[in-house]
Length: 397
Image (cartoon, rainbow, N blue to C red; front, side, top):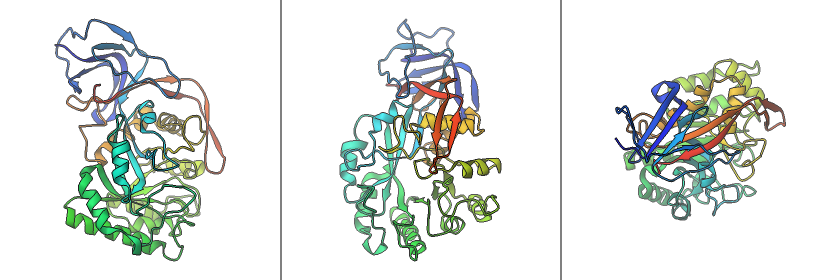
């Protein structure tokens, strides 16, 4: 049987199928394929996988056999929280930069509101690069300028246009985004603002006949973290769960707040969403020691934290940090492949290397090259191993 690609002899890590072993991966017609033949024909040539520092190499030529021996092969990564409205927001990065890091699906975390979502779609979502899903910022103007806080007063909701935008883009918009930090929302009205955002999502769900998640930026919220989590519905996102500013998921004794645990039990989801100001090493260490892993590992990547930034850099660097914090590589990979694919309702389509799935594939080299990461306080962690992107294949192309 003829295949478009064969990735030969790599360590394949696919938590969705329970795979962590040396094996080959086959691609045909843009999908992961079974191999039932003893001999597979793929153009008759074998190519070594490319070498690259962070930033990686994107290969898009067909009919190749890739020698992946000594490398790690995973499903294409899913960055559930990044900012990629590069032409409309000063804090965004280009989506194709994430593709070079092994990320094949990106969720834009509410960079854009309903006022200019059409422009976002035309200039970014529909452009070549990773597939993009998005939260719609409930503030019409979105996050165009980080120095000018968005207005989340429910009196200013453009409800009609929000509904029209979600209808137009369907499953491409997965929910509503609100930032609930001091300095962004009035402290005495923060709980009201969140309640109104959740109520709007509920009303839209009834009219649209589909689920809309609410993603809440929780760092330094005027509403205590436990109380905020109590307000969220099953499937809503408590974002920046390892933040350290203001009220956190930890009690004064350093234990997980019982209200946080109760919210998780109800189905509220907790996204690590690293960022620059939204991650605290102490919070993360205490939470992980208590067995409180995030439901999702994502970057909160912006123009301020990409490249060689010690705060994020890339999703592979964040995964390397979580390995240093005690997660296995398979656990870390699962939290940015299998888990977000399930949350997006695309399980079996993306986030896996099972036969029939889209052929989104990332190839990495795990190097014994120490590097440093910082948290919002300037505390540092030295990661002994570094996951370096080598190759990305998007939909088999």
